[in-house]
Image (cartoon, rainbow, N blue to C red; front, side, top):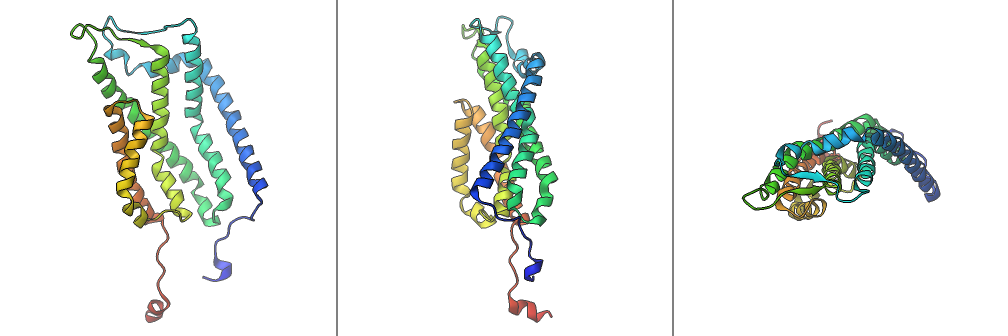
Length: 259
């Protein structure tokens, strides 16, 4: 490959330019999030119904989701609207992230824009869906099994606590499912490779379970439910490094033999 054939990046800019570009992207994200928040608060009743759907069928007739303080209902709707706005803004956030890092990539690598936004959004939705349709029913059913006449306890759950927990878990599962996308970019910029991921696999397993313990409630069910998919995604990431990582170049002698 000659000097003119090499892929190039855009002109190198001083740190002040990068900070200005980062500020601009943050302003765009904040403006989009604000619009999403207004829309989510306007339709917060539907978000409320969607978020409470996994637990309502599991509640006994004497159990309830309760408003324990006068302002709890109002503050809860604000909070879930804020979190929902982040959720719905994620494709735009990912697009702005790409726009920020794209100048540092080779021209040939910038063609991944559509694929990046598509797969990152798809993985985010897959993580949130996994939590909503699998983790929530399983976890809620287990913990509510300790209420009722047999245990002499009635489940009276704070609506603020429940809705905040569910929204945070949806975001947490969505974000951690972005692991393959993160590994892809670390591979493209040369920070990780297949050998490195295999070498530190044991440490990654420990780190994944620690991360799951931090992001989920202090119970083994939700921690394992997050850790197991992450372990699978880590193995997928190793395959990604093999496919998109730099290929070893043939030596000069080896090339000359086949000329």
